[in-house]
Length: 364
Image 1 (cartoon, rainbow, N blue to C red):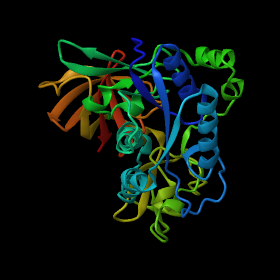
Image 2: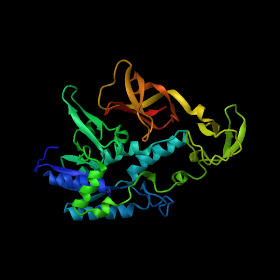
Image 3: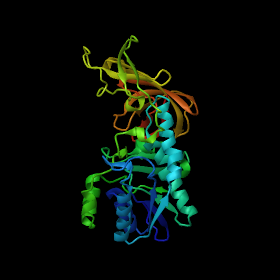
């Protein structure tokens, strides 16, 4: 990270320790730093009290206060960008439409690409806030490959906190002016750094890990969008009733209401057309292949022939060895060396070569 006192960087301040320390590191490196925070909560949504930590919910007011206090303590300007409508159009609509189609969305993938690294810096510039670079507290690394003439995204040095999966849909123009100050740091180092710089309260603060500050996703949908329906076994026999498809995802075992089975049963598939769930034993969740659509080739151009890689089928999944076959510029098929558990339509699949992110796609 080259210091340049004539350069200004806008840091996305969330109210947590990572973004605060990203700003602190940049200031110490000689940059002029501005804090920007997006406000996305819509009070018309019927969540009156947060029941868990999350990015979207009524607890945002506390996060905005925390972000302002952080910037005051750092001695930097702070701007709040109101992006409720944009968030609804780009994240909530994607989330709801994906669920309605019988798939399981990952809203963080869209939020990062469209909102945090898209509309937030864009709207800040439109509001007259001037800066050359944009930075966040994400644990990832980025570098420029002169030979390929493109930016490449890499896992963080702290693999336990790596967030490259969530940034796999970023575009080249977004990576061009991004700084990730924490990419070569560990979480332990950042917490110690926070304490050294007078931010002990942030080092001890609970982190936001979820999308919604509630376990009840139904509040995001029109009333009566989801109706109760049948639960069937692998032979098509009705063995129970579900209380709305939104409450289930592939691989789910708990709260199915089908006790008395000889073996534990899991959700194997979700059929939105017939409003039904198909359940079976764990062996039915194991698959070797899947197809990805809406692919974003990030660190490399789309290859012309099959190649070896590793792939993550969800954020907490251990990247597994596979053979990838490009189908066209926007899709590829994957054959895993070993069968994987609960490959879920709608979730992101991210390809890696070592620590480098090759591409991200959506499981079809």
